[in-house]
Length: 262
Length: 247
Image (tube, rainbow over all chains, first blue to last red; front, side, top):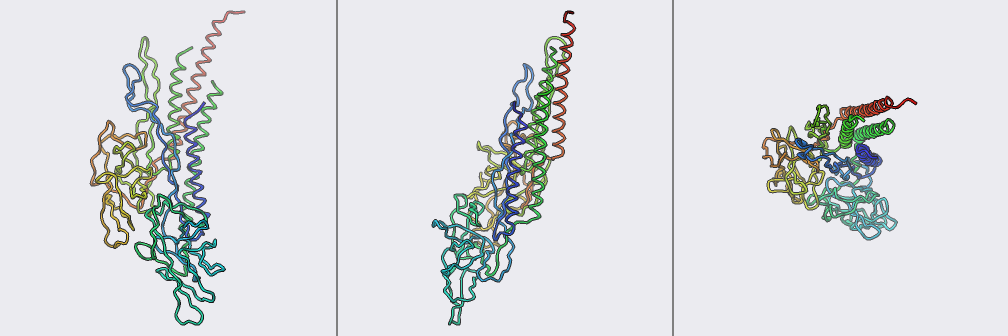
């Protein structure tokens, strides 16, 4: 025995549950540097024909409109919302935020390049500029021992004051990558993103050129999660979940009455 | 046994279909641009010899509820909400022109502009493909301008426009893919007066409370028919008892 309504309402519960997971992840990352919020996108499942419009109901009559019943809903995907997060000044010379489009390039242990907006860099034991997880940024920049006041310029130039020298010395240039469709980047966790067929190929260059955002040293980009917005979404999702579970209850009640009374 | 039970059976089938349609509306209460389905039962008279006393119920989806949904601000450049009765022209899977209210547009890697369900959006010369751009802007009449990569943000270039139509006066129906088409075929002319709102998205027009009421109605109608069937059974067994010979 099956009831269409039961299964359709189940698709609603599944989809709302998945949306809740997306919201929970956004809220969990509210304080993650450079995090971009995701939005779950719903789509209708196919409609099925029960009666075709115009098909005969009897010798003289025809269905005027027909009966096409929808089969529910599903989460088609999540879209990363790429709006700029708030810039917070930290004063730390190795903290850097991107103002505008672009990603830092990070060398993964397997030799692949990953991309991130989180610019909370530090120095490794060997003096290389690395992410919080110890992965070096690309192209690699080496800070010599004894260097003081490392700073990063808007165009990615890294300079430091070396012992015994009056002028700051240029250590290298940070390059950023931009993508035709940044929403198509795949999230790898640890604040990292990977290039995919849908994101397009990374266009690497100096920050501030060809549409790439400029860098702001001594600042960090906060996540673009708006807590109030997420909470409103959460309540809406919860209500949608509730009405779908009410639907399951009603369909169940119908079947229960039928099996008890007949 | 009385034929009543068969008439009741059609009503129960009808209630079940209506419940499925209601469940689908509720499930899509958060799908952008979704238009709720309106299901209604119609009486089909059973003609034949004798008294015409039977009308069986046939459930039909009369059409979609075309009331506007709630418009929400998203701030995303590619989100457009149609105003009034305007519809966006997209290409259905079979290549036909079809209409939708769904305006969460996406840009694929190849630059093809699609709506949230992946159907290509149509412009002046078929599906719209945008060159790589720093910024894409859509104005209220659907004109798309871009700032090319490295271009001057103060001088955007117009590349194409979203086609908008208004279905007022024509009967449109929802197809199996959830897109609207003119009943009986044909296409709607572009409407230069149609407007949209960029940075906003229109939600579903399903009202949870109204749909819950429909749900309760369908449940009660089901229960009433159940009652009729069990009454018919009681009457039948009472009649059978009358005929029984005394022991």
